[in-house]
Length: 506
Image (cartoon, rainbow, N blue to C red; front, side, top):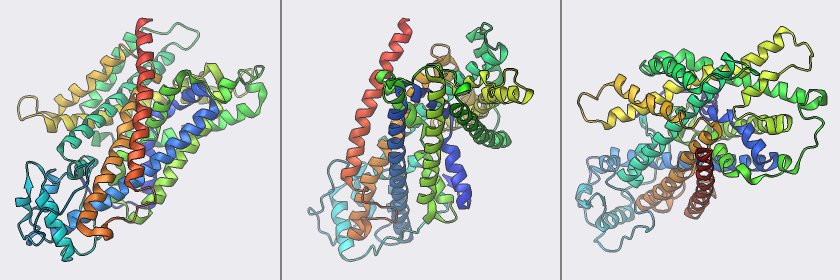
């Protein structure tokens, strides 16, 4: 659990933007160039809208969880004793496909809650008992403003409403996402370092040599306490935002002045402007990866000094990044076209600002933009590694392996090993996006369904809608999102597997 840190609306907004902006932004322009500017723009807007919707779902789930925990905690001396701890242990997971029935037991029973939980799931007796307590108004009305002293992580919400199996599935999905993010950082670092060591048109250095250099730089950082790298993280976030603004300014200047365009003499094709199906699966997964923030929603809401503004703040953050991605992706794809790099900053190596003999400040901009990912990935890799190492440390039994530095080392090596076989950043972004489908769509939808059922079982109609409920908070909407996201996942996965097979064959 995370301790409460009161944060102003501006701080919450900055945190949300930092969570969303990651390595994925570097692959968005290539996704636009691969599938067409219009298709990518529409897809990104749809993904952003659905991402905001599932963010609202996570806020609602958090409200249901806090209200239930508050109810059963303050009534701990009554027959409700043990409910809060049973919920935290995953003993009260709600059936997903079959709503609870309540007509099989005497509803006036005062049997303690612990006696109604059998075989690790809700018994029919428990449903009947709750129905009886609700009919006697024993539960009162939900306190939607209740907040604990610590934030409930998504893994804890999964345990409460879906059971321990869902918690394991969430942690596996999140671990795979973190691993792919580290993999992407490694591949980006190698691509940028190769250019720094040997700028075009010189021959690039050996990829294996660059991989060894990355390991020498990054592995020691992964053994350091991440709290000691706070200054590096702050600088990285500020530098990324400033560099994105600089990239947009230089792109708009070049797009508006035909003399600066690389392909100004070529008419824009249908596949560039409208649609090209060649990279749709990979691009869709990349766009999902670029808008992930759901895993941090409970923490953001818990720490907010004005939690009622969290939804508006998230709306602003999601559509700020959507605007930045669209502007950057569309202008870069239109300007560079088939020459759009998979790591977009590398396109700035040839930046001249229209000068035949560029002055020093133009060269400075070109080098800064193209080499910034070296620093940002170096600062991001230890953060991802720290999360993985903490999960591994918790999972391991006490013994010789139960050491922070050793788990950090074990988690730092696999992404480097994977990069030795696949260093295509567009493929890696796509794989990260596949892991992101469950984070963005799957878990929020499942939690919404079961948390609303729980509250309705306890409070009846009074518990049906929380403050962050919307007309799209129904079970029908949640199952629809589950179905659509599952189809998109299968579509993206099939095309990505096909692409990986072709790469290995070649």
